[in-house]
Length: 499
RNA sequence: GGUCCCAUCGUCUAGCGGCCUAGGACACCGCCCUCUCACGGCGGAGACACGGGUUCGAUUCCCGUUGGGACUACCA
Image (cartoon, rainbow, N blue to C red; front, side):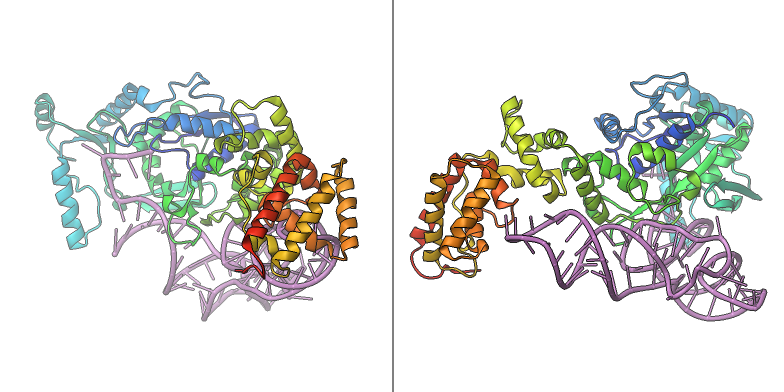
């Protein structure tokens, strides 16, 4: 077998979509495991829908995921250029070749006429498609119109009868009647090719052996096979991936269902390791029940024949689980590194971050590592460590459901006294001191731990109290205890109202 | 409307005729651990869309129905 050559061919009409990322992942996996080449080709043939920074986003996102390409933008390669907008002459050449061979023709129909035709078809319930108005135009009329500079497109001449047999590696053979196909455009009036022409020509010229793409292309497969036939080329292997459905299963995944761009996942605090693992298992299943894969492990395990064909509901629950798993796998140093941008964005740490403050951040990581699922939860999780002061906690939070304002105020005052006399702010000693205090006061540990927790963090769900106090340090703990006592004194007597 | 694809727990899926009283994971519920929250451990509930065939035997093969989806542009 020839060396595998696969391409990921996004259109820069938007940022890298999560579905595209999965396609790219499978492409990359197939290339890497066979020692083949992974090619990035930019299909920028639609000048109307072009998004300026889309190419940059696609490249950034691919790199962020760890999917490097061997040929394409920034990488070069023998088969370039890799932007279709730079290959216009090639498409024109092949389109004209088709015309000369009698397999395609010039069409001078105006958009208005086409629109009217469509309307009529819809009203009368006719199947849609071009009515072949220009298919049999006399040669001299074509010459005349061309000479007169009339706008034209080039359409492929689909056989009027018969069938075409196509093949998808996952679904096997499919047969389409030529009658159900219309004479599709291969070259647009602006001189740009349509997807059909461009992808077939490029895939052939670039020596692509496997085309992996979304299921939405399956209806176009017969057109592509027709084109390969017309040129006398052997088609590559086609693998159509099931599309991503909205989480509720109703319709294709789209922007209205939340994040769909890789960059959005990145901004929400997902790790590339998690996203890759999640995407890998969405449409592919290993021979075992293993669920955790690094990119390297996936290269070993991946195989095309274990790809699925049924549509996938894109539900995020499992991705969150994966993210938690991979966050917990990171070293404290690495976690801190990835956390930093999220903290800087919220102004909790300066940019650039001085080594001392970064070291403190690393010190905090073990306290929060197993409590977060997203990096974006970090500002809230470590904010009270990084801020000099916290807002005074609500009295109801301080008092809780069982105690009274006086009781809790008294407890906190005692804690403040005891801790101010404590020089050793180590986790172990803090535990000794506070448990001892609880014993002396004949209180259950929770009765004093919870108010202290709220007093120093403002939250009821936090890391363990002693590690928390140790990391906070005496100079932050004492003032916050005082502040809490003041809050309670101001609240007055009786039970604080509980909501 | 036409053409095409798909169909196992809520979700991702294993299953390629008997190993299935249908397995795993996420989510959910309960218990344990415990200073809260997590993490972790243990347990629970939860699916072969329906109807015909084929076969000694169908989740597995075939047909139909139903349901879902894609496409139907000088967009990809």
